[in-house]
Length: 426
Image (cartoon, rainbow, N blue to C red; front, side, top):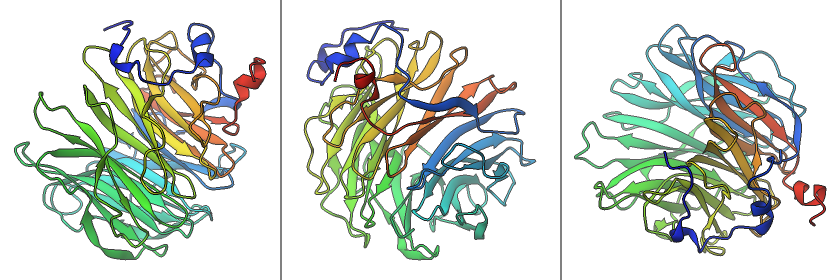
């Protein structure tokens, strides 16, 4: 592993002096609300790949993949919480169909607290993996049966992402994966009304289809306009991947052509996460990996018109080890927080770190460590924010629940410059 590299390709990034001042000292904790806590009750085998969603009042729900818990290979489980962090009922199984693998869920909540979970299910659509979903009301009761999202069933449909507007209408996007790598992949989507009725047919998101496309993410504003981001690879080592995006109106009509998100073309740009505020301004964060330097987290802000707001910027200040798997969330005013997994930074293998930004893109204090316990590997974070900017981060942690991986979480106060005030640097 590379321990520390000064990367000349990153000199154009905005690195705040305040963050540099704390880069080698004890890491700020980002205004935590209470202690970190374990989400999963069932601890046998592994619980992995968490996703979290919050309603405007701060109530939140966490979903994850649990291995062997549903009596088969893997299933999708969830736990609801009040805004105070108290569990609302026991953990629950999401998938009704339990044969083979049900995995890698994504969850979204609407303003009423109702929520939708989507996931990949192996063999259930009659072919390979398909995308399935389940709707819930604000009390956590299922609304109708689980349903198949994808219309096209040959090949594999995997890695779904879901977003909702203020009325509870929602959209699901996923990767359609061909069985052989000589054929391109594609990103597809399906819109739904708040009643769960499909709005039009499934649609292909990516226009350019000659290369591999994968790792999609979707975010929606309060009016139902939405944006999808994904990785597009050249398919060869000489043409590494970039991050692309496509904007849509609430009707599902594309708003302009697909566009490249990253400005920097050197190295690998992949695995995006996207968040939108209530007005449609949005931010995309992704992995950036110029060989041979460690991976970093990059981001780019956009106006509701799709115009970039300023240049792309590096999120992480610390550059020791790799930074991967970003997750971004926005409050209603456009303040946002980015989280990621960071190698070596917390004194062990991997830890989860975050950074907060104002609606104009200004850093609100230095990056901060999310996990309190540092004796294990803390990876794959997911973050959600409520309307006021309070946010919750969930991640998978190795061994801390007494078995293999378990799901842990930490709640935080609003996205405000807490450390700047705390250290008298305002």
